[in-house]
Length: 423
Image 1: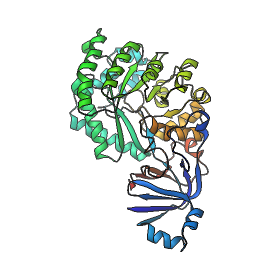
Image 2: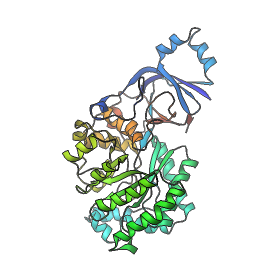
Image 3: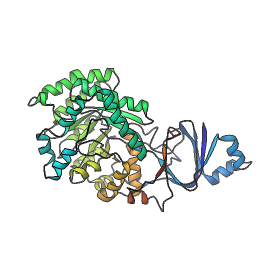
Image 4: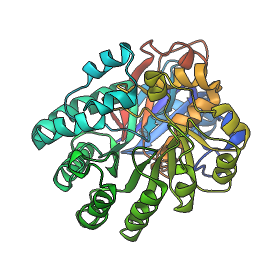
């Protein structure tokens, strides 16, 4: 079906010239906008866009005649804003149950490591997931997927990592894949078997790494369950040497690297991620000039997760210095039950403004085109461009784009279109 949206107040994040795969450093302040615009879609993809003035020049017999003959439906936007759907490149959306008890423990003063030592944390989620059937896991995860769609997210990465054994890791990835089939979301999947050391391998991390390499990766690759492979590289979790072995094994099966890097310390996660040409390294609360230089000279996206920093009450990643050093920065939710129980990208945008001191233009780039890049999707998602998927949000009339991060709890998203279909 051919549709044309007319009288758009602002058409945001358009590619009028050459294709943009990501924006780095000062370029993150660039945000192409067309005032008083139109947008044409043909089925699932964007076919054309421009100013209403341009549309008038294209229509020798008048705009009305052109619209009646070139579109199956004309939608009058009456001054509303259209911008790309949000691209959330780091989530743990598939999980069972919840962990609000640990939230109360945290309020009472226990640290993240103390909660984990008492049987909480990732191992708690692993036990809950083990005791949950695949169909029930799908039901719970589908509800969360529908929730994030309602917030304006149209593309998402989903990790495993609460299985910690071959059967349950595969169960998680199957559910993630099914979400991409039964919802309009574009879903990319990541194998994160190296998320924590399961209790059955206590004191024997090397043997668990061997199980990941020898038993999990071959099956997951054979069944085409994952696009990426990830490791939580941190003291008390997995070392740089462990990460090197796991990423090297994944690479041999065509799984591109991602890394949970430098969340709690200067862990070396950035260095090993860049070594393996990781598509992204994520968290990055502990980063400095060495990491900045490595990332600037690489094809790896720096992905920041302000929701978990907020929840854990940690120091925020040095986003301002990253951008000033020329890095590309993406923002994602890290939606998970233990350290970021938030799936709303607009909340992340508000945190990025307040805590990272990012501008509105930088934030929009971080949650659209750069988020798409961090999932390998920027050729098809993340901007308004001819031939890209017609995923976009309609924002009610607001004083300026700055109102989006400023008023991040207000319900500003009026319509959500994914693949050319109104949700």
